[in-house]
Image 1 (cartoon, helix red, strand yellow):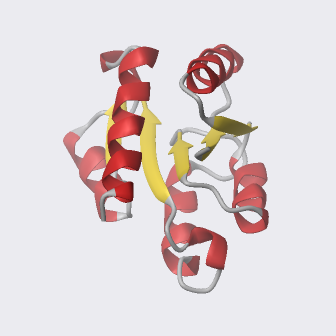
Image 2 (cartoon, one colour):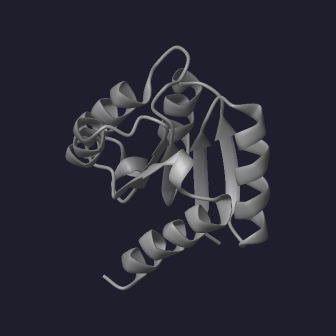
Length: 130
């Protein structure tokens, strides 16, 4: 079973995505702020990180920077796939997310939870086919 960490601070979205991901057969853990998310990433191996950008304490940009810096030092981060799921949708922001290591950058308003789950399956399937 693939394990996903969702770093999101909106309780409604947490409930919605947790339910959808579990229904799709994924194991899901949640962090409601960036600091808690980084702690979980250092302690446990996840197959995928779903990351919001606007977060309390440490924002998504800083998390992406830290993962990029730590990827080869912390074994749990070596093969981590990252999907940014944010309402920040300017071209520069999307490009920055990809440049910082996100496999996919989705704008929340443009995707239903079911479509997000389909995108996650694509990312994780591509990973299996390597």
